[in-house]
Length: 332
Image 1: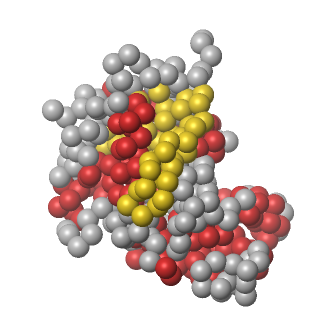
Image 2: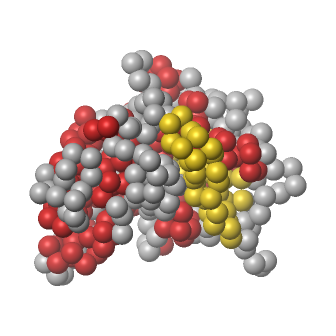
């Protein structure tokens, strides 16, 4: 087996206009490429990042779910995650200052990347989990001639009212901290982050999962969840929440009608115990897309069933779904 090529790099976009009306000066997105692009540039799989993830966090997909010997896997950071242009490393502000990145902005940046750095004319697959799945839906809507297949894992085409409450509770946990000043933080929002982590953990995992935890749940969150969020600038956490809140592939239009116009082959995947992308909601999106396959992963991991970096059982289910999707010829 040949050694895999791995290349972590930044792609410069220049001054990049956003749908909200602001422009990111000297914008960039950070990309991890695993595997090699073939001579005719037809083997690239795009993986947009999920909430809080950076490319290295999703590198585990290469092997267990996506075959890096066959495919060139390109993991592209969304704006706001601290690796690509974000409030922490650029002139970007928050919604309080009128800055809201939408997924159509992320997709536009990724489109620039694929055209300028890879010369892609057809995209065999966009694979995404959670906010990555949201971007996969956006890709299929915005670039129907380019995208052959999408695999949307534990995500939605429009942020539901219930999920909006989840996102708003996380945002409120941070902005209610005494160090919030309306545009950022005067000091680390320690109390806000602790509240944020408690809320996040209670929704991202499932009730059956927490019944397996031996230590007190507060200690579990302190040790297993809080460090993941502490590595981020809290402004970036808020910026990504604002993107999640704004997500809608059919703003002002009938969602079913827009999904009905998707031409890509689709695998739509739900987790059996996902608390905020419920199987019912995910299946409703799939039902609106012509020919889409709906798949249910049986797992107590909750939402994290779609990102099972340490759980072979869920990995095998995802691999089977992806392999089946890639075996299907694209629509003409």
